[in-house]
Image 1 (tube, helix red, strand yellow):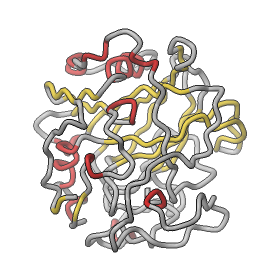
Image 2 (spheres, rainbow, N blue to C red; image 1 turned 135 degrees about the vertical axis):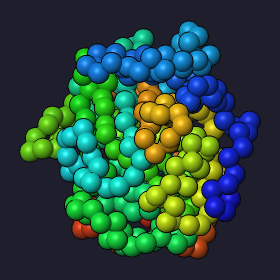
Image 3 (tube, rainbow, N blue to C red; image 1 turned 30 degrees about the vertical axis):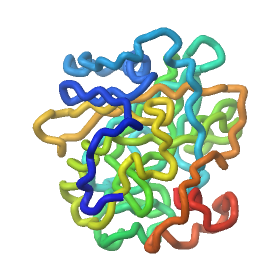
Image 4 (tube, rainbow, N blue to C red; image 1 turned 90 degrees about the horizontal axis):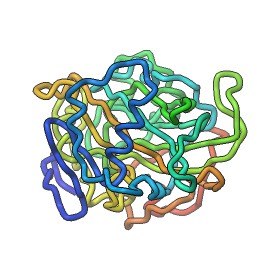
Length: 315
């Protein structure tokens, strides 16, 4: 871990190509970019065509995504919606994720439900707003938003014929002892009902990660800068295993190269097995969390997961 977000070195665990404001990460980057923007109505920025990972080689998307723990902050009943911000302040982030079947030639998984959830700019999760994010941060209630404390920054989208989903959200903050991340689940076989997604099977539970250099730039901006303390870089994270895109490392495109506050577009291909079932237990050990790690009681009815104060309980 490093203090004040200042360790942004690129190490042997991160195979990244940084070109023209774009971070292209690992084996699925190019395939993920191409499919993520296919079948959408909006026109891709010409600058986005500069993604140049060597992943264009054969069989790249055949690598199954790494499954990891769902962590302690999961809540059932997230809403089906594209915009999950609910007025929460932060740097805009557009996520385009593509679900493909790694067991069937990387064909799109039409109708897959992709569910994401993440913390706000100060490290708070909806449903757990009294949990301490570590370091020094304002109270969650001080952000001035009118967001619902049980639903903000959580949601589902249903994949189109190209396997693509799109979310409008904000760049997540951080909490001790984790690096910046977004949780993700892929469901199949269920259906939209009463505004949420019900039934079916969870095929994949994972997390999406961010380049340290970009995270450092974001955390120097308001409102992120009001959360001070030690931010965990990718190499020190207890969940990220250094596998690049197959481990959830996003490819990021700046909306405006000279001004990170304008936001980012992030994309990734989620190569899953639609016939598999994932319990959400996953992996993600990494030692005992330091003092000041998030604490707090979940709302009633929340799955408790595995017992004990393991590192994955703070994921």
